Length: 252
Image (cartoon, rainbow, N blue to C red; front, side, top):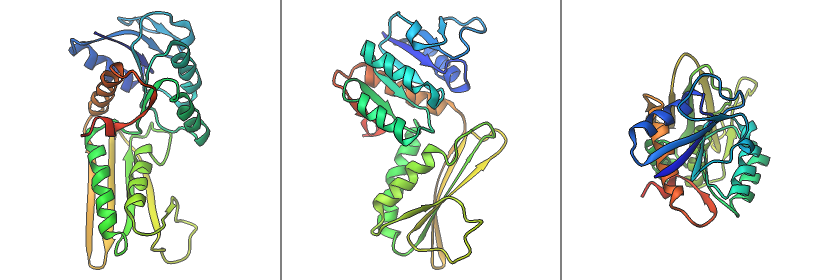
């Protein structure tokens, strides 16, 4: 049995993870973390800070906010409990702290926990290698109106995959409204749309001479991200060595 703690347990993704755990006979939720504390009655204790929890934990799944990172890293390092970080919007300094902590504890981090998105990353990399010299690359991501970070972490992952595949140097362009010049071939454009209840939609466009190739992923529910996070948690629960892991460990 995997003893799981959900950070951000009162949010939409935290509740999605909880729902999957209720259906999974191999996982039990022993606690939750949320800055507001217990709030409504939950089937497990909720703590406003990881430092207040002293119970059983084999792994923590985090779907909260970048501001929670320091407390989670302190908890993971002091208790030697692995972390699944599914939160997006980390600063470069926070990413550096995650990398440093991974030298002492197992950390699984991905801006997108969907299996489909991670297959898409490989497709984008291969397409960029074949088409990067003859096509302009544009990325459009769409999310619900409550999402605070833009562009999405997944859009940046896709841009990185395209840049890795391209046979030339690239530069990311996030905003064109003030640019009064033709598009440079090296550019990878990234555009963000926020509206309604869109769960997540990512499109990579390879626009060439008289032809367009599009690679697209649409999330129909948040459950796909919760499923990926739970799979990552089960994976980390069996990992003994510290290190920084990602979806490549699950996508074989």
